[in-house]
Amino acid sequence: MKLFSTYFLLVLGLVLAVSALGCRTTLPEKSTDLLHSVQQRDQIIVGTKYDSPPFGYLDKDGQLKGLEVELAHEIAKRLLGDPNKVKFVQVNSSTRVAALNARHVDFVLATMTITPERKQVVNFTEPYYKSAQAIMVRENSGITSINDLADKRVNYVIGTTGEANLKKVLPKAKLLGFKSNTEAFSALSAGRADAFSQDDSILYGFLHEHCDVKVLPDRISEEPYGIAFRKDARSKPLQDAIQKILDDMAKEEYLQGLRQKWVRPAPPTVCAL
Ligand code: GLU
Image (cartoon, rainbow, N blue to C red; front, side, top):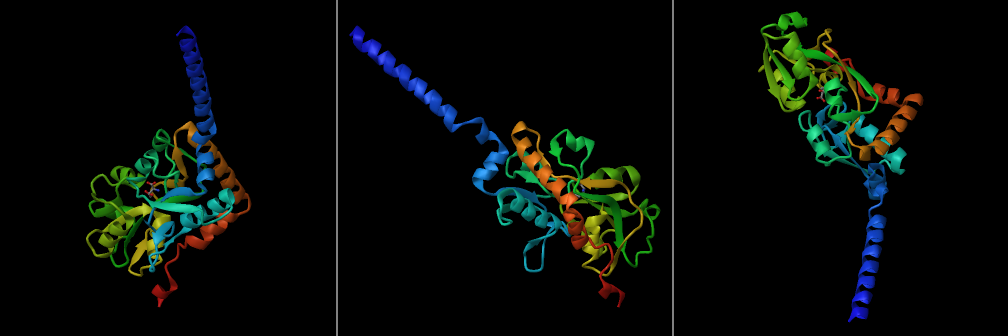
């Protein structure tokens, strides 16, 4: 009996030792690193906006297009060897941080301005685009500057930096919040508001498609866009790899070419006819 229990304890010890070893090999530190997970999955999952021309938007055929969409494909090409190894998940200004922290996406590439407040919650790359908050009005409105808007109806998108800025610069205006750029623009276009304040680069996207609106010369704030990552050690290797890719893109003037291709501040020539 004594011999049996010694034998039993020996076997049990061996089983425990092997399974502990097994646990270590099936869950090595590396598999918790996001860069490694992305390489194993062979795909990046990117949070992008679908309502923000010319960065991320659905074209007339329902295809997702834009500067950030093209940038994501190029990141996939440089990171995984194939521009198609990317899956897009729709986010908007008020859902992008939640989508990131809920691990629905690897990172957010969605016209997101780097601010000190947001840096408390997410990690950003260096800026890949520098925008500025501006104001759009209807062409025939007679409004020529921000000073004409003190008591007017001004649209903004909920969750944007613009929302907070407008409360400071136009404290007496009637500020109207919308969930998306498309809704905010439609309300302006239909006369349900006097102005729409948003990043100039996004307003240019709408300007390029419509003839009855214009962007005022005033700028309210600087809006440098960064790619946002979760604020955890797991994400750092992927963030570093993508920062290196962005640095290379800047050196090669690839980012400059992307900006010239997509952001067109002038109204379409057809409007001048
Ligand atoms: N860039 C601004 C922001 O991050 C406005 C556009 C947007 O929300 O994406 O708040």
